[in-house]
Length: 290
Image (cartoon, rainbow, N blue to C red; front, side):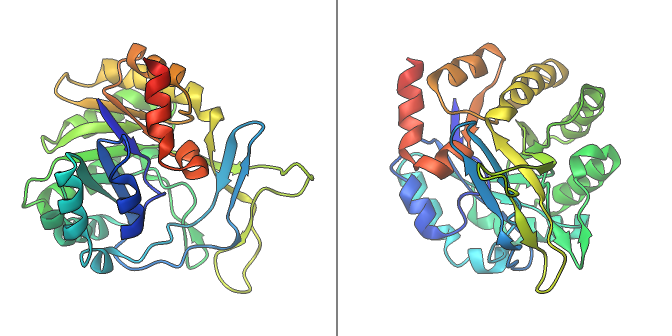
């Protein structure tokens, strides 16, 4: 069974080292973009421990793939020695950015995660469309990734929490490419506006200095449990047997792992719970599931 962190939480070598002795079988770095991104400005993350819900609008802050290749080989060696694999999640604005990311990082990783569910990324004042809701864009990006994947690295594709009506066409899209052997469901729920315990907005950020303050972002944590279970079952039925389904969304207990198995998942990822409580959560929830 695949046990991994969700993309978005590990972007520097010290984060990888921290996970190298945990109970994960895979460490996911990223998401990384072709060029470095500073991310959004202001209040970009909030977690409510009572509802176990998080909102974020970090904006894919990262140092870019060119910077990452200076330390990815060492981190891969470290993880492989500990019988773990290194995956890097990539994101972009257009197919050529995804393909260039693949060309840069493929020699230094065990797996590539193609993140098609980034929910709140802005560029020059314009919000980036969420690719998961556009099957034609999915096919275009995966075609570019396949052409650039000269090292033949296995690839995972990560979708947003889509509606039932898109499951069959999105399953067809990912299963059309032999290099894609995993589907990850699901990313955060896009365009959500939360409220803190004191009544103020959960998020209050700008995409640039002096820009308009915005309050919506991706919602994660406990509210994703129902989406996770629904999509895991639907995609498991829609995908060929050669493809794994890795489930993510609100996992924070042993019961969630038992639910994942019941729903037909081949592994799971933990995002919000890991971010809030550290790498010990992986062994904790696995022990609870025994």
